[in-house]
Length: 165
Image (tube, rainbow, N blue to C red; front, side, top):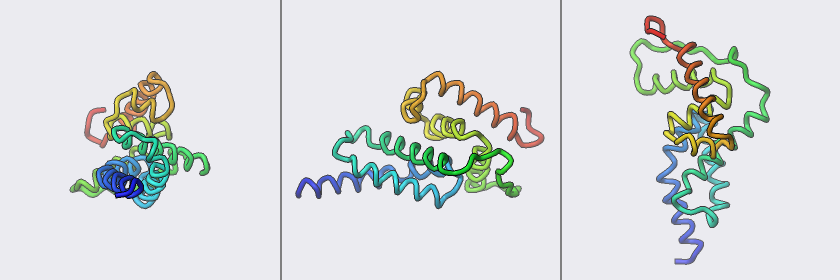
């Protein structure tokens, strides 16, 4: 097997192993399944181009950082979001797993971009504060304070009626 074939086989195995996690992260960052798939594909292209420089144990982290940076670039190209532009969708009375993911995505969409990214990476992707800071290019202190503000905003503004805040 040639070195290129070996490289392609390793990358194909990496894509199979990481696609579910990266797609989930992208979906929670964007709230849009189609956009999430596009971001993951673009992240894979950039990761493949750097594949020879990436150690296998760092491949998922590298791809996740590329994904987050692509999403940040997307934010910068668009006009600023405002919390008032969050689409309201009725939540069915019997929530299935898909309904719950949709509800969480809508809640996250109401957060400022950096808070959303920190909350997704810290609590949905279960990254450490240090890994989140490295992925976003911010300090650990900024991760802590941003996560705290994001969680407080979620608790204050998105607790279903009838539940304590």
